[in-house]
Image (cartoon, rainbow, N blue to C red; front, side, top):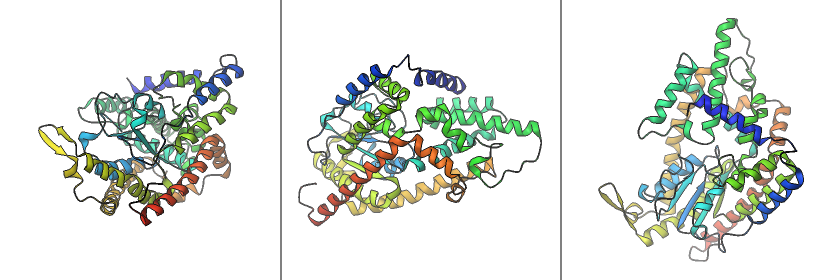
Length: 419
C-alpha cells in the first residue's frame, strides 16, 4: 500500500478513535471495559519465575528491545528455534510448531494465538518522557534518510522498492513506524519545499525541538492525533493488548471506549499491572546494566539449562543443528561477555546511522544537551498525556526491586528454588 494512502487511512481511522459521546456513551463503555478487564486479570501462571517452553519477548518500541533481541536472545536461540517472521513482521502466524522464541512489537493480545500455559513473557519498560522523546527522534531519523531524494514522490517509490526487495525488512513495515515514519517523511519534505520557495535566511535559535522551518516541533508532535493514537500511554496499551494493531478485534472496541472516556483508563492500567506481575522478567531501560545482569541470571541461565537439557535436533536448510552445540560451555558469565561486546558494536553502528541522518536536517540535532532547552510546559504536557504509563512505570520499578532480590538469592544459593 502506498504510504501516503496508508497515512490517509490512519487519519480516517482516528475519526473512530475519538468518537462522539453518542457513539460511545459512557455507561455502555463502562460495562464493556469492565467486562474486558474482569476476563483479563486471571493469572496465566502458578509459577511465573520458571521459564516455560516458549519465550515471548513483548517489545515495547524505543525501550532498547532491539539490543536484547540481537545481543541476548539471538545468542541463546538458534534461528531454527525462532517463531516464523518474528520481531520484524507483526501479526505472528503460528504456523511453525514447537518454536521456542517469539520476539515482536505485537501487543499482549497475541497471547490468544499462543499456548498460554506453556508461554513465558518478558518485556522492557522505559520512563514515559524518555520514550516519547525517543519515538519522536527515531521517526525523524528514519524519515530524514529519504531527504536525499528530490521530492516526496521519489522517496515513496524508493520505500516501496525496499519493501518489495526479497529478503529485506523495511522499518516502514514495522508497527508503529509504518504509520509514524511516512507521516514524518511527508512533513520533512513539506518544510524543505517551503524553505526553497521562501528563499529567505532563517534564524533557527538553539532549540532543536522547536525549529519549525526544518522539522515538526515536539509540541506539535505530541498534540497530533497520530501521536495521541499510537505514542501516548503506548506501553500500557501494548501490555494490556489494546494497541491499534491488536490481534483481537474485540479489543478495538475497548480501546475506543477508553479513548472516548479517559476515566476508564484505570481499568486498563490494572490489567497491565497484573500482566507485568505475571511476567518472567521486567527490565528497565534507564537501569540497563542492572537489567542486563538480571536478565542473564534470571532468564538466560534458564534458557541455557533448558535448551541443553532438551537438546532438540532441528533442520536449517541442509544443515542439522543442535542447541547443545550452540550452547556448549555457555555460562551466565560468558553470556554477559558476549552481550557487552555485541552492545558495543550495535551502539556504534546505530550512532553512525543516527549522525548521518541528522546531518540532513542540520542545524537541528537531537542530543541529551538539546533536551535541556525543551520547556517545562512541554514536559508537563507529555507527563499528562502519558498518565497511565507513568503509573505503570512506577509499578515496574517495584517489580524490578523484587526481581533484584530474587537474583541476589539465586547468586547466594544457585541450586535453590527460583524466587
